[in-house]
Image (cartoon, rainbow, N blue to C red; front, side):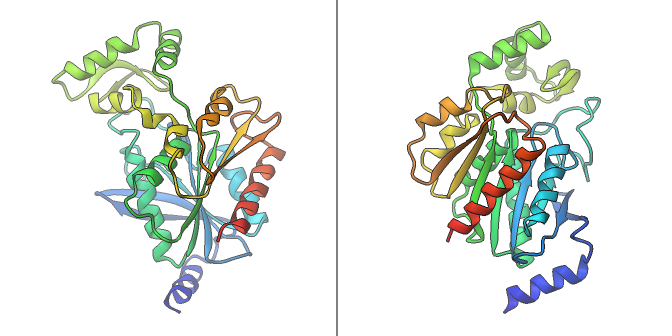
Length: 292
Protein backbone atom coordinates (compact mmCIF):
# COMPACT_ATOMS: atom_id res chain seq x y z
CA UNK A 1 0.00 0.00 0.00
CA UNK A 2 2.77 2.42 1.00
CA UNK A 3 4.78 1.59 -2.13
CA UNK A 4 1.74 2.22 -4.34
CA UNK A 5 1.19 5.56 -2.61
CA UNK A 6 4.82 6.55 -3.19
CA UNK A 7 4.51 5.67 -6.86
CA UNK A 8 1.42 7.85 -7.20
CA UNK A 9 3.14 10.73 -5.40
CA UNK A 10 6.15 10.43 -7.72
CA UNK A 11 3.92 10.72 -10.77
CA UNK A 12 2.11 13.72 -9.29
CA UNK A 13 5.33 15.55 -8.45
CA UNK A 14 6.84 14.94 -11.89
CA UNK A 15 3.93 14.86 -14.36
CA UNK A 16 6.08 15.38 -17.46
CA UNK A 17 7.98 12.08 -17.19
CA UNK A 18 6.85 10.86 -20.60
CA UNK A 19 8.72 13.76 -22.21
CA UNK A 20 11.54 13.50 -19.67
CA UNK A 21 12.22 15.15 -16.36
CA UNK A 22 15.55 15.87 -14.73
CA UNK A 23 15.75 14.69 -11.14
CA UNK A 24 18.53 15.38 -8.67
CA UNK A 25 19.83 13.81 -5.49
CA UNK A 26 22.70 14.41 -3.07
CA UNK A 27 25.56 12.00 -2.40
CA UNK A 28 28.68 12.87 -0.39
CA UNK A 29 28.14 16.59 -0.90
CA UNK A 30 27.75 16.32 -4.69
CA UNK A 31 24.54 16.87 -6.63
CA UNK A 32 23.79 13.95 -8.92
CA UNK A 33 21.32 14.26 -11.76
CA UNK A 34 19.42 11.86 -13.98
CA UNK A 35 16.73 11.87 -16.65
CA UNK A 36 13.53 9.98 -15.87
CA UNK A 37 11.15 9.02 -18.67
CA UNK A 38 7.83 7.34 -17.99
CA UNK A 39 6.28 4.61 -20.05
CA UNK A 40 2.61 3.72 -19.94
CA UNK A 41 3.02 0.07 -19.00
CA UNK A 42 3.99 -0.98 -15.49
CA UNK A 43 4.38 2.13 -13.29
CA UNK A 44 6.54 0.37 -10.71
CA UNK A 45 9.21 -0.96 -13.12
CA UNK A 46 12.22 1.10 -14.18
CA UNK A 47 15.34 0.49 -16.28
CA UNK A 48 18.35 2.25 -14.72
CA UNK A 49 20.81 3.22 -17.48
CA UNK A 50 24.53 3.90 -16.93
CA UNK A 51 26.57 5.44 -19.77
CA UNK A 52 30.14 4.70 -20.85
CA UNK A 53 33.54 6.35 -20.46
CA UNK A 54 33.40 10.13 -19.82
CA UNK A 55 30.00 10.21 -21.52
CA UNK A 56 26.62 11.44 -20.30
CA UNK A 57 22.92 10.68 -20.38
CA UNK A 58 22.30 12.95 -23.37
CA UNK A 59 24.43 10.85 -25.71
CA UNK A 60 22.67 9.44 -28.78
CA UNK A 61 22.48 5.83 -27.60
CA UNK A 62 21.06 6.65 -24.17
CA UNK A 63 18.41 9.01 -25.56
CA UNK A 64 17.43 6.45 -28.20
CA UNK A 65 17.18 3.72 -25.57
CA UNK A 66 14.97 5.87 -23.34
CA UNK A 67 12.66 6.76 -26.23
CA UNK A 68 12.38 3.12 -27.31
CA UNK A 69 11.70 2.05 -23.73
CA UNK A 70 8.87 4.59 -23.50
CA UNK A 71 7.37 3.08 -26.66
CA UNK A 72 7.62 -0.33 -25.00
CA UNK A 73 5.75 1.02 -21.98
CA UNK A 74 8.74 1.01 -19.64
CA UNK A 75 10.08 3.69 -17.33
CA UNK A 76 13.76 4.52 -17.45
CA UNK A 77 16.21 6.51 -15.36
CA UNK A 78 19.35 7.53 -17.26
CA UNK A 79 21.95 8.69 -14.76
CA UNK A 80 24.87 11.03 -15.18
CA UNK A 81 27.87 9.70 -13.30
CA UNK A 82 29.25 12.74 -11.51
CA UNK A 83 32.93 12.00 -12.27
CA UNK A 84 33.62 14.30 -9.33
CA UNK A 85 31.75 17.29 -10.82
CA UNK A 86 28.76 18.80 -9.04
CA UNK A 87 25.56 18.49 -11.10
CA UNK A 88 27.56 17.41 -14.17
CA UNK A 89 25.99 17.64 -17.64
CA UNK A 90 27.41 16.90 -21.08
CA UNK A 91 30.67 15.17 -21.91
CA UNK A 92 33.51 15.39 -19.41
CA UNK A 93 35.62 18.52 -20.12
CA UNK A 94 39.24 17.50 -20.61
CA UNK A 95 40.33 20.85 -19.13
CA UNK A 96 39.02 19.68 -15.75
CA UNK A 97 41.53 17.65 -13.69
CA UNK A 98 40.56 14.01 -13.36
CA UNK A 99 40.09 13.09 -9.72
CA UNK A 100 37.31 10.55 -10.29
CA UNK A 101 37.91 6.80 -10.13
CA UNK A 102 36.43 3.98 -12.17
CA UNK A 103 34.91 2.39 -9.06
CA UNK A 104 33.22 5.61 -7.88
CA UNK A 105 30.33 4.63 -10.16
CA UNK A 106 29.49 1.71 -7.88
CA UNK A 107 28.30 3.98 -5.06
CA UNK A 108 26.41 6.22 -7.48
CA UNK A 109 24.59 3.33 -9.13
CA UNK A 110 23.71 2.04 -5.67
CA UNK A 111 22.47 5.48 -4.66
CA UNK A 112 20.10 5.68 -7.63
CA UNK A 113 18.86 2.14 -6.98
CA UNK A 114 17.93 3.27 -3.46
CA UNK A 115 16.31 6.41 -4.89
CA UNK A 116 14.11 4.34 -7.20
CA UNK A 117 13.29 1.91 -4.44
CA UNK A 118 12.23 4.78 -2.17
CA UNK A 119 10.04 6.14 -4.96
CA UNK A 120 7.94 3.03 -5.34
CA UNK A 121 9.83 1.13 -8.03
CA UNK A 122 9.75 -2.52 -6.98
CA UNK A 123 11.23 -3.85 -10.22
CA UNK A 124 14.55 -2.36 -11.27
CA UNK A 125 16.51 -3.61 -14.25
CA UNK A 126 20.09 -2.38 -14.44
CA UNK A 127 21.41 -1.48 -17.90
CA UNK A 128 25.01 -0.46 -18.46
CA UNK A 129 26.78 0.36 -21.71
CA UNK A 130 30.50 -0.18 -22.35
CA UNK A 131 32.46 0.91 -19.24
CA UNK A 132 29.09 1.51 -17.62
CA UNK A 133 28.37 -2.17 -18.22
CA UNK A 134 31.44 -3.14 -16.26
CA UNK A 135 30.58 -0.68 -13.49
CA UNK A 136 27.05 -2.08 -13.32
CA UNK A 137 28.34 -5.66 -13.04
CA UNK A 138 30.89 -4.49 -10.44
CA UNK A 139 28.09 -2.93 -8.38
CA UNK A 140 26.15 -6.21 -8.49
CA UNK A 141 29.28 -8.22 -7.64
CA UNK A 142 30.32 -6.00 -4.72
CA UNK A 143 26.90 -5.61 -3.09
CA UNK A 144 26.66 -7.59 0.13
CA UNK A 145 22.93 -7.90 -0.38
CA UNK A 146 21.24 -6.48 -3.45
CA UNK A 147 17.96 -4.67 -2.83
CA UNK A 148 15.10 -7.02 -3.62
CA UNK A 149 13.86 -4.51 -6.20
CA UNK A 150 16.87 -5.28 -8.46
CA UNK A 151 15.61 -8.09 -10.68
CA UNK A 152 18.15 -8.38 -13.51
CA UNK A 153 20.98 -6.67 -15.38
CA UNK A 154 21.60 -6.06 -19.07
CA UNK A 155 25.19 -5.36 -20.05
CA UNK A 156 25.38 -3.71 -23.44
CA UNK A 157 28.81 -4.23 -25.03
CA UNK A 158 30.47 -4.22 -21.59
CA UNK A 159 34.16 -3.47 -21.48
CA UNK A 160 36.78 -6.18 -21.49
CA UNK A 161 40.28 -5.82 -20.12
CA UNK A 162 43.73 -7.05 -21.01
CA UNK A 163 46.64 -5.18 -19.48
CA UNK A 164 49.03 -5.88 -22.37
CA UNK A 165 46.45 -4.79 -24.94
CA UNK A 166 45.71 -1.64 -22.95
CA UNK A 167 49.42 -0.77 -22.85
CA UNK A 168 49.65 -1.24 -26.62
CA UNK A 169 46.60 0.94 -27.26
CA UNK A 170 47.94 3.64 -24.97
CA UNK A 171 51.32 3.74 -26.70
CA UNK A 172 49.69 3.73 -30.13
CA UNK A 173 47.36 6.59 -29.16
CA UNK A 174 49.75 8.77 -27.19
CA UNK A 175 53.19 7.70 -28.37
CA UNK A 176 54.70 6.83 -24.99
CA UNK A 177 54.65 4.16 -22.32
CA UNK A 178 51.65 3.59 -20.06
CA UNK A 179 53.79 1.75 -17.52
CA UNK A 180 55.99 4.83 -17.12
CA UNK A 181 52.91 6.92 -16.35
CA UNK A 182 51.64 4.34 -13.85
CA UNK A 183 55.03 4.22 -12.14
CA UNK A 184 54.93 8.00 -11.76
CA UNK A 185 51.45 7.71 -10.28
CA UNK A 186 52.62 5.10 -7.78
CA UNK A 187 55.66 7.06 -6.65
CA UNK A 188 54.62 10.70 -6.77
CA UNK A 189 53.75 12.74 -3.68
CA UNK A 190 51.93 15.32 -5.79
CA UNK A 191 48.15 15.55 -5.76
CA UNK A 192 48.02 15.87 -9.56
CA UNK A 193 50.18 14.68 -12.43
CA UNK A 194 50.25 17.13 -15.34
CA UNK A 195 50.42 17.16 -18.22
CA UNK A 196 49.33 13.56 -18.62
CA UNK A 197 47.36 11.63 -21.23
CA UNK A 198 44.30 9.80 -19.90
CA UNK A 199 41.29 8.08 -21.45
CA UNK A 200 40.08 10.44 -24.23
CA UNK A 201 41.96 13.48 -22.89
CA UNK A 202 45.35 14.57 -24.20
CA UNK A 203 47.70 16.59 -21.98
CA UNK A 204 45.29 16.88 -19.09
CA UNK A 205 45.77 16.68 -15.31
CA UNK A 206 44.89 13.68 -13.16
CA UNK A 207 45.29 12.49 -9.61
CA UNK A 208 47.44 9.39 -9.07
CA UNK A 209 44.45 7.45 -7.70
CA UNK A 210 42.40 8.34 -10.77
CA UNK A 211 45.06 7.13 -13.18
CA UNK A 212 45.62 3.91 -11.27
CA UNK A 213 41.91 3.14 -11.03
CA UNK A 214 41.52 3.26 -14.82
CA UNK A 215 44.83 1.73 -15.89
CA UNK A 216 46.35 -0.47 -13.17
CA UNK A 217 45.76 -4.16 -13.76
CA UNK A 218 42.63 -5.40 -11.97
CA UNK A 219 40.78 -8.57 -12.90
CA UNK A 220 37.44 -6.87 -12.14
CA UNK A 221 37.89 -4.56 -15.13
CA UNK A 222 37.31 -7.60 -17.32
CA UNK A 223 33.52 -7.87 -17.17
CA UNK A 224 33.27 -11.65 -17.85
CA UNK A 225 35.24 -12.22 -14.63
CA UNK A 226 32.44 -10.55 -12.67
CA UNK A 227 29.80 -12.79 -14.20
CA UNK A 228 31.19 -16.21 -13.36
CA UNK A 229 29.49 -16.33 -9.97
CA UNK A 230 26.70 -13.76 -10.23
CA UNK A 231 23.30 -14.85 -8.94
CA UNK A 232 21.44 -12.07 -10.73
CA UNK A 233 19.77 -12.89 -14.06
CA UNK A 234 22.10 -11.30 -16.57
CA UNK A 235 21.89 -10.65 -20.30
CA UNK A 236 25.04 -9.63 -22.15
CA UNK A 237 24.33 -8.09 -25.55
CA UNK A 238 27.20 -7.93 -28.03
CA UNK A 239 27.44 -6.56 -31.55
CA UNK A 240 29.14 -8.73 -34.15
CA UNK A 241 30.75 -5.61 -35.69
CA UNK A 242 31.93 -4.07 -32.41
CA UNK A 243 35.53 -2.86 -32.80
CA UNK A 244 35.69 -1.28 -29.32
CA UNK A 245 35.21 -4.56 -27.44
CA UNK A 246 36.02 -7.03 -30.24
CA UNK A 247 36.95 -9.87 -27.88
CA UNK A 248 33.75 -9.78 -25.82
CA UNK A 249 32.03 -12.64 -27.64
CA UNK A 250 34.99 -15.00 -27.31
CA UNK A 251 35.68 -13.87 -23.72
CA UNK A 252 32.13 -14.79 -22.69
CA UNK A 253 32.92 -18.41 -23.48
CA UNK A 254 34.73 -18.55 -20.13
CA UNK A 255 31.51 -17.72 -18.26
CA UNK A 256 29.82 -20.98 -17.25
CA UNK A 257 26.86 -19.65 -15.29
CA UNK A 258 23.22 -20.54 -15.92
CA UNK A 259 22.19 -17.05 -14.77
CA UNK A 260 24.10 -15.43 -17.65
CA UNK A 261 23.00 -15.33 -21.27
CA UNK A 262 24.86 -13.91 -24.28
CA UNK A 263 22.96 -12.51 -27.25
CA UNK A 264 24.85 -11.37 -30.34
CA UNK A 265 23.19 -8.85 -32.65
CA UNK A 266 24.51 -9.52 -36.13
CA UNK A 267 25.88 -6.37 -37.77
CA UNK A 268 25.61 -4.13 -34.71
CA UNK A 269 28.60 -2.04 -33.66
CA UNK A 270 29.45 -0.67 -30.20
CA UNK A 271 26.58 1.85 -30.20
CA UNK A 272 23.62 -0.24 -31.45
CA UNK A 273 22.20 2.52 -33.64
CA UNK A 274 18.86 2.72 -35.39
CA UNK A 275 16.92 -0.56 -35.49
CA UNK A 276 19.45 -2.25 -33.23
CA UNK A 277 18.22 -0.01 -30.41
CA UNK A 278 14.78 -1.58 -30.77
CA UNK A 279 16.35 -5.04 -30.82
CA UNK A 280 17.98 -4.23 -27.48
CA UNK A 281 14.68 -3.06 -26.00
CA UNK A 282 12.89 -6.17 -27.30
CA UNK A 283 15.47 -8.28 -25.46
CA UNK A 284 14.95 -6.22 -22.29
CA UNK A 285 11.19 -6.77 -22.45
CA UNK A 286 11.69 -10.51 -22.91
CA UNK A 287 14.10 -10.65 -19.98
CA UNK A 288 11.68 -8.81 -17.70
CA UNK A 289 8.83 -11.11 -18.71
CA UNK A 290 10.93 -14.18 -17.87
CA UNK A 291 12.30 -12.86 -14.57
CA UNK A 292 10.26 -13.64 -11.42
